[in-house]
Image 1 (cartoon, rainbow, N blue to C red):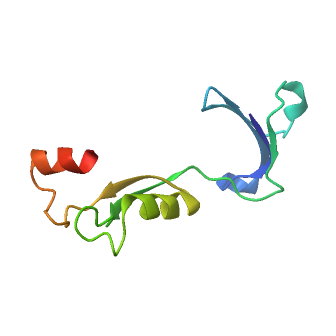
Image 2: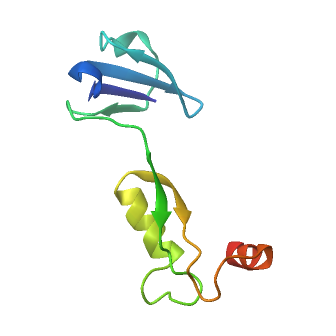
Image 3: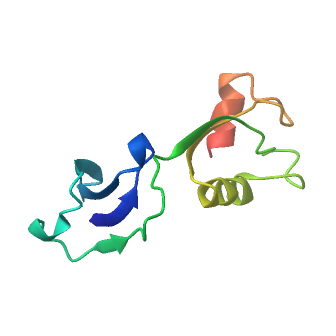
Length: 107
């Protein structure tokens, strides 16, 4: 995958980001993506491209309080906002404070 015309926060350069096997292989500061052969080309249209965000404090409320939030709706909202990983707080019913409750929450 190649992302062209991407603005990065470091000094507002316009770059091409070359991705192979789901990892960034190179950030080409000359935005010279033509030398790479890839049919999967995304034009960032001079918008900022940032890494995924980790949210270390979320309340998915699953189990026991799913009328407020659950993993399905909460993870979709997180992804929409650029969050790629999150840590759920244990204040559910029952509280996720034992190994057994954590395992049951995983299922």
